[in-house]
Image 1 (cartoon, rainbow, N blue to C red):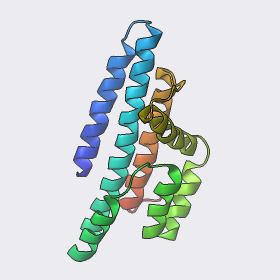
Image 2: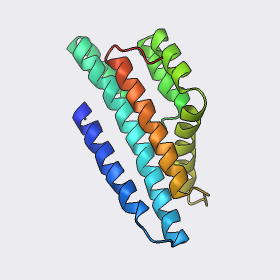
Image 3: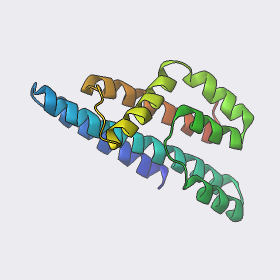
Image 4: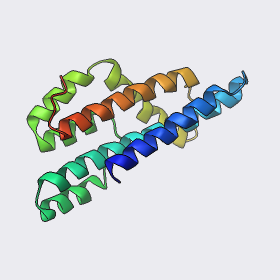
Length: 158
């Protein structure tokens, strides 16, 4: 997956959010859409983080190191903020510090909530996630992905 594919995945997800927004006031249907969007938002985070760090390695390291990074990132799942910070730390303690500072509070809470709700949904549990809540979480998740992209592009995030 390339940066372009990350962008395309975001566009597809943005389109689904717009589609869900137009659903008439049936609370049960909106609730199902919110769950579906939560699962997709978690996948977006997982794939985007993996792709951005993998692409960074491919453009800055030898082919052997890039292949090692790519293979290591294949097992990256459940993209809670602590795991995202752990990967950043693997590349650079400064990256971790910048990302941690930039994501404290609402951004971290949103990412963690997406993943926690996805787990509950996947295990058939009832969750109280609404369309407006997942939309907010997703918007914050996109900001986190953008921060990771800035780090990989050599730009300060805070």
